[in-house]
Length: 92
Ligand SMILES: [Zn+2]
Ligand SMILES: [Zn+2]
Image (cartoon, rainbow, N blue to C red; front, side):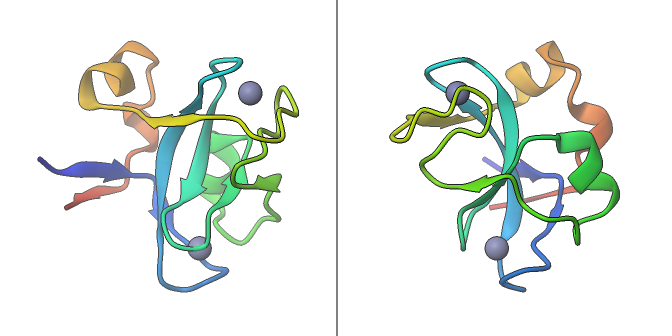
């Protein structure tokens, strides 16, 4: 199954920004799958990957949970939350 990403991480130069939901508050963020930086505003980082990150895993930038659990959005959830417009590509 391929996984959607919204951009390439400009900070570690290695990771892809994945759509993740906080298990505590349900907020959807972009998270690098390598360096684990988190961006609260998916639209902004999808548009400009060089903007400063909001927090780093596992801290949620929305509800401030220090040890939030995170779940990656699957394709159904990406459609449900109207995030398809930010998907830049897919990878394994
Ligand atoms: Zn990164
Ligand atoms: Zn949260």
